[in-house]
Structure formats: C-alpha cells, structure tokens
Length: 349
Image (tube, rainbow, N blue to C red; front, side):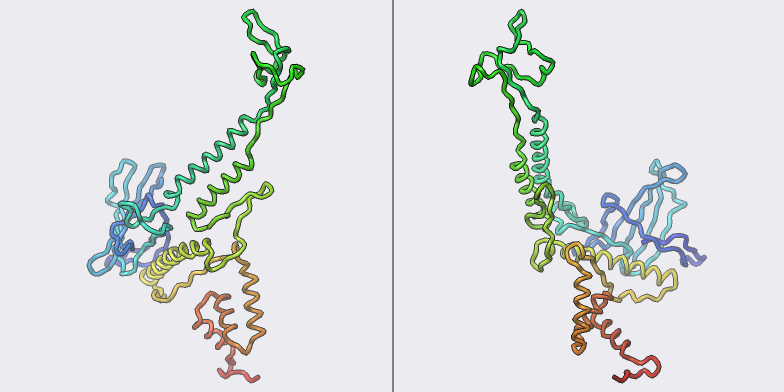
C-alpha cells in the first residue's frame, strides 16, 4: 500500500493523498523477517521508465522495537546510482502495510522462508511425460504418409544396377530389392502407417490424472470423449478432492485480502481523516458458480424462507447468503424490517 500526491507538513506529518495498491511478482519481493511462517518485514522493488530512462524503485517495510512500521522508498537510475534527493521515509503504525499471497501449501525447500513452493515445481516429471506423449503423437503423424511398395518388375535399372522408379514419386516409394512380394502377380502394395490415437489418448489421460491429483483435482479431471475434452466438475461434495484443495487455497487468499483491506483502512484513517473500524471482521465471498448453481441455491433458500416464515432461521440463513453478512447482522436487518419507522413499534398483524 502506498500514498501518492500527499501533502507533507513542516512538522513532518502527512495529509491527504491517494491510496494506491502496487503488486509485484515474487522475483521482486524479498522477505526480511519471518516469524511463525508469517512475513513481518519485507522489501519490494519494481522498474519503470521516466522520460525514456529506466528507474528502479525499492520500498523497505521495517518495524521497530515498539512494533511500529516505517516505509522507506529509494530510487535508482539506469546505472544503479541512488537518487538520494528522492528518498522518502514515512512513519506508519502497527498495522502491516503489505500482504503476501502464497499459493503453496508448505515451504519445503531450503532458503524458501517467506515464499512458498510453487506446485508446478514438483510437477515437472509429469509435465515431461506429457511432453513425451505429444512427441509420440507428433511422430505418428509425421510418419503417417502412405507408402507404395512396388515390385521390382516395374523398376528400371541404371548401368550400375540401381533401381529407377518409373515416375516422379520416388520419395514416397519404397523399392523392394532382392525380395518378392507374397505373390509374384502383385505388382504393388500400399502401406498405411497406423496412428495410435487410442493408446496415445489413454496415456494422455493417465498423465493428466496424475497431474490433476497433485493439484487436488482428483482423477478424471480431463477425459477425451467423442473428440472433445470433458471436465469432471459436476458436483461439489464436502470430501471431493477439488473442493478440499480449493478451500485450502481460499484460506490463504482470505488472509491475503484481509491484510490488504486493513492496511488500506489504516491509511484512510491516518492520512485522510477516516473513522473506519480496523478490527471489524472482513468477509470475503467466493463465486462457486462454475461448480454449483449459486443462483438456484439462493432461490431455494428464499423459497424456504417464505414457505417456513414461522421458522426465523430460514430467513436468517437467506439474508446471510444474500448479503454476505454474519448471523448477528442478518438478525439486525430482520429486526429493522419489523419495526415501524414512525413509532419504533412493531407493526400489528
């Protein structure tokens, strides 16, 4: 999180400005301090062009003994020389002003503290198998030209005794020398190389199944049926491999989004006079429509809330899902809807 175009007072305080979010790839990120697998101090870098010349920006987020953060921004020209007149040091609070999204489950490589092991790293052997499958398919197609085997009776011979084919298709003809075909009467024989589509397809499906298992998608994630690729995402059971993997990834994404939101709220309160509650719960909603029909489920919940109006929990559950709020907020909305705005009394039946 950064603050652009802010006003720096003579006292050193900062006011106003625009709150911006800056994203960098892992190669531009260096964790400085990691506590309990959580990055507490980090450095971010990025390069751009100013008037046609390369400029590199380095931002250091460090924390003092009181737990307060400091953001130090330094600029370097195209030769790596620091532009000291542009250095900015900003005192922040105890809210972490950055967030790290790690999509790996564990850090099981040396010197990977604060990062996360990319899942594709362990999948390299299977990716090689897929590459071999493609090579086999390419080889079969590359050698699939029809061959015409002709009897030597139809061939002419030069002075040295080498056969000469009687037409211009010499590159696609294979002349039999010293061998007779099964029947002497057979003057030519066509040979059509087989393309092993079925065997290659099964091999592809096996390799893709092994790959999808590594990513929590289970087997039969991809299958070839009638010349089309079918994906197995028809149901979303609680114990389905795909949903378990998805939920693990979501937990990391939720923490990442919550850290960003709290940092933005702190910047708004501190530099723009906001009054946001930083400790308030941040709800993150994910779209499952590619696996489940969310609209149909929501309509069913609404129907239950209307049909069983004497059971309040159905209305509460519907509002929780419809408005993405917790149970306490849903009950508050229901209570507000039952109050008469003029008398603050409950309306009569």
